[in-house]
Length: 49
Image (cartoon, rainbow, N blue to C red; front, side, top):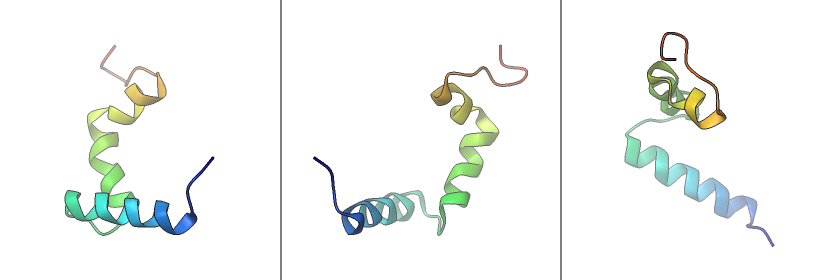
């Protein structure tokens, strides 16, 4: 079971709107700076071990 591409696109656009950004890159930049992406991936951030 899955979702349609258009449904996924709509969900992403709504998240971006709530974050007040216009692209996935803009949304990912603060997450990368704070180490959130490393924690989600199961890796320790440099200097945050």
